[in-house]
Length: 220
Figure (cartoon, rainbow, N blue to C red):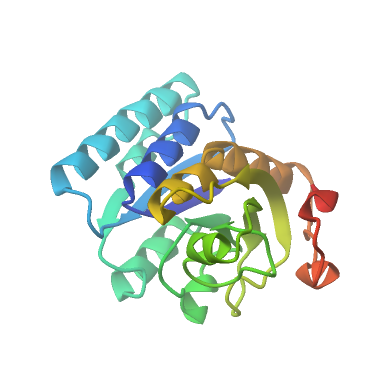
């Protein structure tokens, strides 16, 4: 199964994605990683990617997989370009997973993957859209859910695949609470992908079933 991970270059996100890739033990997953460069210094970002290349190269060799896949670590300025679409066409992924992403993915780009997923660091449907930690903090929601969901044309509207609870602190800045919210990002990716690949035709939980629900732990 070909899986593309796509994230921004936020240091905390890179670190958690790195932890996930480092601990992958499923030899049926062929992983690729695309990073959208925003702010991280180029040297730091390339060092991370070089380490990831070595980890996956070792993994592919040990499991006698196609070692050419380790070259598919790319840095891009945007996912809304023809170059990005060409990459998807070349890989022909079964799953493309966008990790706390900051761009709206075009419909034609979504159509290039069999399954599209998104990681959102707040419970849905109440906190759809950008900067959810900012809104959680302002509305004094200290308990929420790191959420993996299917992507569709609407913003954060797809069915839910997996959720992990987190707690933020009202006396901390948004940046620090963001880090708290993704403390189990690597586990969310691991268990979410495992659920999708283990259960054929898994459709997830419809968000409309949870409109107005106050206790989100009922569905975990």
